[in-house]
Image (cartoon, rainbow, N blue to C red; front, side, top):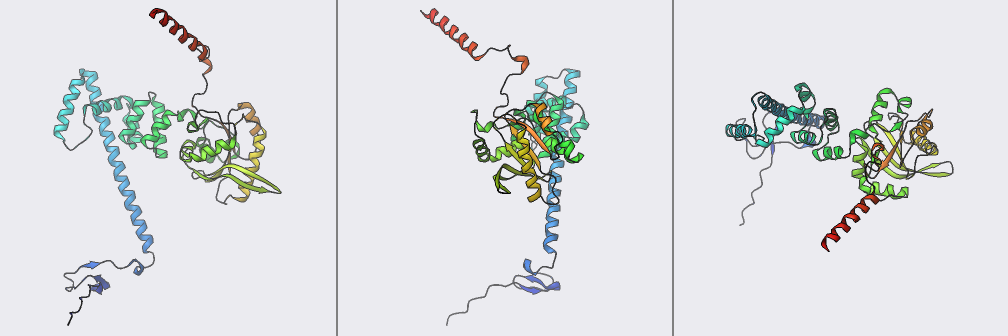
Length: 385
């Protein structure tokens, strides 16, 4: 006769409060407790769990940021000490090498005490002589991002601007380097607009900083595109880099968005929603210089979005008109007395597309260079004859 199969242990309620256990229970003294099903939990359990998890995540992040801040301040203190000793007692590279060796022997589990990094600490302290600024701003950045600022920027105000933007926008080291290479500080908030006259002061200030001039679409290549649809398609094909160039807060909604008004069809080139400004942004792209008539077309789109898409809690829809070039006075006249917020900026495929006026005539042209090279080649051939 075949023996009966042993049934698996099944959790059963036991003990005070109906707790479940795996296997047998020895009173209140010993058991293998198991968690009950989530479906058996009281109302509000999921919300409480989510709140606790958020609190834990916030605290873990705070601890990490606090540790990073403490480390950066420590590096500043070390760098400041070395800097003072070098100025007063003439410490050289050999002393720094000895200092690194002794510190690593004393703290073998601590990274960042190499001679190279000690020299970076010294340069860091020299670049930021005021500890209060370091503690308030720079210490919020990881050490590698601080090194990127040191290596690429000499002007303290420019370094401070990029430090603030990195904190505000959460730029990684790679994005920070990219923004510095593109000269973001020279373009941010430079678009011509009527925002101060059409938006509340707080929204106006934020909107001004949200737009730049010129926009750099270097990922399109150096060829000069002639058709707007080609440019639009290329921007959508490179949407990640396009959004990065637009700046923090832009969310892509659609391209060539159909708008039916009366018995006519219109198409919005590119439609975005700005998460910080809490409003739609209509972007019209032109491959020709600015013309006042462009504003009227854009104003129609803004009216349609405000009337048909805008939520009651949204801010006024903002228009951004990108042209290959623009005359400032013409743009200012075209935007004057316009009730809807509009910004106008240029777009380029190269950051430097032409020489500054003060350099025109001081550098040789391509033709002059070619002539010079031809003369050098001719001289070389004569010597070899």
